[in-house]
Length: 259
Image (cartoon, one colour):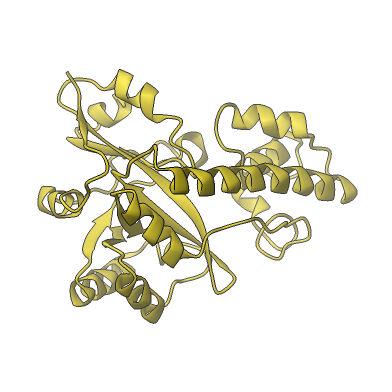
């Protein structure tokens, strides 16, 4: 929250993967002049590919949404354990204790496994782990996990009073096709991330046009993951108008302003 304020932002969303555990600490740390939008990034799978869905201002106590996110978190933990075992079989000296310590109180994921591999001296940087040799999709040490169908995730978010936005559809990995985005719009999607550090100018222009044609809010953000991505809060922003149009559709929770 301090870094968001220092970057000159008026509004910041916190969307950790499959958890809302960081929200109380973020609320407590809010400086004057900064507004927090509580949210979450849900792990989904479409046509066998990983897709991320952002939910904003939903009711965090909604039982159906809470049940699904708990199931995803359990699957993430079992998956990480299995990947550590596969890496050990490939001669990579990483341990579950290392991975768990890197995750801390957060939800364990592949980036923590990748960082453990860096610590072990197997690779030079975390992104090198996401290859066919290691833990990239269909890689030698890759393990599948439970993930929601994005249409069901949209329904869960909306039932909890929130709004759903498709995260970085052209940033990396599988490029979500236009027709798939149109299908999600028909299922109740409210927005699509246009402004994102890993989407180039041509991708942004195309997604901006697609959002307009589908009646979606052209959203975005820095997708800051701290040390993993480089501290980049504020690198990509959206207009106040787009923010208001998106958040005005939510009924499950409200933004929190720093005092």
